[in-house]
Image (cartoon, rainbow, N blue to C red):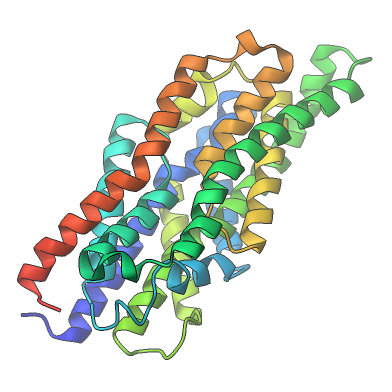
Length: 335
């Protein structure tokens, strides 16, 4: 049997592996448009996204506090030192499956689903903070894609109105440069929201092991989570880049700028409110909004149906794997 400190180390390492897969899986969200419009090479785009993800991860802790104590009641899962491990297994399995298939599902909701499933397996529904789940997960789950769609639609209309009197070639030349700024803003907002989720679950593990007394994020947790996401981003997810950048709507630099700016604004606002939203959902919806501003037929709505199906399945599927993982681990390490 493992000694408790070794089990905690294993949980932290597993969390960092998840953070790595999150960076690899979701870096496509920040760089898909800038690569598909040929504004930047894949190597340059990945390097930029990695650095800005790292910086964004160090800028706040509101989302981390939500994951650490806002979705499950710490007093109800106290003593269950395998719970976070089971949650991470559920999230990683779903992340790897969708990564392999090239489906831009949500790493955020995979982690949340794994955590809720493991908590339910440990103590039933009493362990779940339903007000927190509704306010911080379900409402943003619905609201962030809607906000992304509307923001993308409006941003593209504004850009089109401003540039109406200019030649298309000149407009695209301007936005080839501006898109580097918008992609950087989106990468920064991604780090601000997504890296904090792993910070939150590591902090919950530390709380369950009695290493800390409250849900406050230690500095070393911030640094290692930011570093893991940065390294994952450097690996990249090129199948998902292809889906996001080509299959939804044929993007030009002006479209990429509008979609990235809209997504960055929505994600930053959510991060300030402590809502762990999905960058994947938001940027996909923003691209649909940008495409729809031109004409509805410009968007491949069949792809939209496939993406929404993946989004809806993520929470319950990751939750089921998290619950199953808990049951198996409980046989090995009763708690």
